[in-house]
Amino acid sequence: MLIDLIRRYLIFSIFLTCCGCSLPFVEKGPVEPITISGVLNGRTVLSGSVEMTGDLLIPAGSELIIRAGTTITVVPSESTKIDPEYLSSQTELLVRGRLLVEGEPDNMVNFVPRIGEPTDEPLWAGIILDGADNSEVRHASLWKPDTGLLIIDTSPRVIGNWINRARYGIVVQGGAAKILDNVIADGEGGVFCWDGTTAYLKGNRIVDNEEEGIVVSRDSRPYLDRNRVSGNSIGLIVPADLPYDPTRIAGNGQDIRLLVEKAKP
Amino acid sequence: MRCLLLASLLLLLSIPVRAETVYRDEQTLWQDTVWQGDVLVDGILTVAPGVTLEIRPGTTVRFTRNDSNGDRIGEHELFIQGILQAHGTGEEPILFTSAESEPHPGDWGAINMMASNGENLLEHCRIEYGYRGFHAHFASARLAESTFRYNRRGAQFQESTVDIVDCRFVDNFNGLQFRDSTVTISRSLVSGGYWGIRCVYTTLHLFDTEVTDNMINGVNLRDSEVTVQRCRIAHNRRGLYLQRTQSDVSDNTIESNSEHGIFLEDSDGSIARNRVAGNGRAGFRVIDSPVSIVDNNIVGNDEYGLINDGESDLDIRGNWWGTSDVEALQALLRDGRDRSGVGIVRLLDPLSEARF
Image (cartoon, rainbow over all chains, first blue to last red; front, side):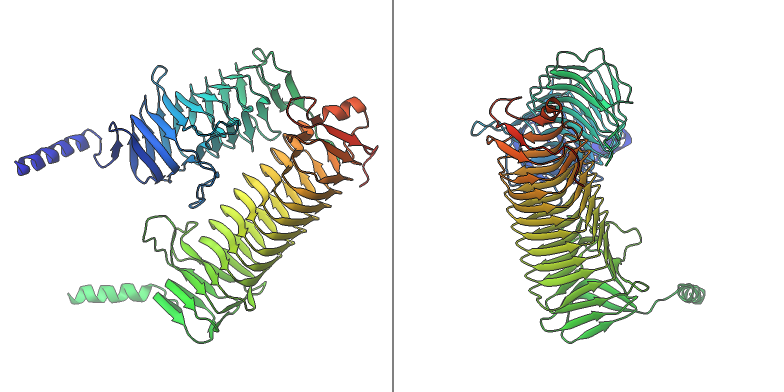
């Protein structure tokens, strides 16, 4: 009986290998709830209900896949460890490998912080893509992060996400991210393009944030196309010489502020 | 068989062999030792208390990579309980580096000092590909004219007294990180990391130093005392971020940081005669910090000159804001007039022109 089982497993393994699949990955789910934190080496697939009890690092060369419909409950912390070189004092998902969030419009991936004492402060750090090659975040809902997505020196595809009540919706530092059809609402600031990024922002709805909708630093050259920016304190802050599509930027305290040449010393 | 042996012998003879001192596994230096030439540390080498390790100019010290727990941090290192005297020269610096053919930050541990309170010195050294280039607990040291690059942390120390002069911390993940220490940094460069300088419970004197191009914060202190004079803090995400810190910040240029030039949170002290210019969201962001902000040039910041996000009102006296027009001055502020729950800012005696 045992030999028969082993034989079947081996045959199945060979079959999968021939099909281009590989068995040795960690499939976490649908047994509920799974707790997860620390460094995830190799290939990890999450589905179902997952509790993120501390910082989570996907190191370079490793991969995290989050299936549609997954709910990740984040346990807040103000003093998470900083080794090996985490970037926030709050609970964070830090990706230096590859992240695939495979939400669908009607079956989103949900990141929900566990709620303790009522507070206006962000409850978790958010998702950090730090040189995370070839990553994609689709149809995720992120609630009350410090920074929904912090994208550093990489060019992921960020499509169809909902980021609510963030201090910073999306921060892009360098790289050429594709940021398409996201909703960033009810937070402090929307999208920040810094450090020479050439990100492509199209079809996003950036609404009802207390401060800025989209901010572009003087050294950045993003492509801004058909973004709806309204209900923010300042809608769009851009270098005066950057082309942008103004058609859906309306209803902000100040719609557009152009950055003119710096004051001389 | 003979042919095979002969071929092997010829192959061996064709490989250039460098004579080097090799330390394998865990060893301890029990008597004063001098290094010159090439040294390979293939383990953890301890310098015992009372023992001095002297390293002469032109020496290369290489560390093999050994990551026993898979955390991508090499463990081979120098562990110094005695004294380290690394005397390089401008012409013949000392190199501490990885022995790997394709080196990476974190290949080896650190020049690690523990309870070493003698005359420790690294002069004209280059330290690269370590987890922490220089690391100290309960120690004192002087780092002079040395370069720390491609380390996960350029230098890190706790409960130590460290004097850093004419050094370069470039392209490390974090430049310098310390706690419960007394640190003086002069005429140095901290650039190209995530955090430039990050510390808590520390007394820091920062003079004539450039802190530039760091992705998170240039200089970040919490629960500390800091003097910052004649420095340039530029092109970081935040320039100078002080949390619960007593400060004396004068005669600096703090410019072109993406977010805030100076961010003060529950901090106190004096900020005078600085040029705070061309920063992204604001020159200053202040949260409940009764600081004195006097005689500064606060000009050309993209969104605001000053944001008050604290509940307290702020009286700011005698600064040049780039304009004397009352309406234009008010537009440079964001305070309780713009949003409820925060204090207002009163600009008292604004200057009519820059004083420097």
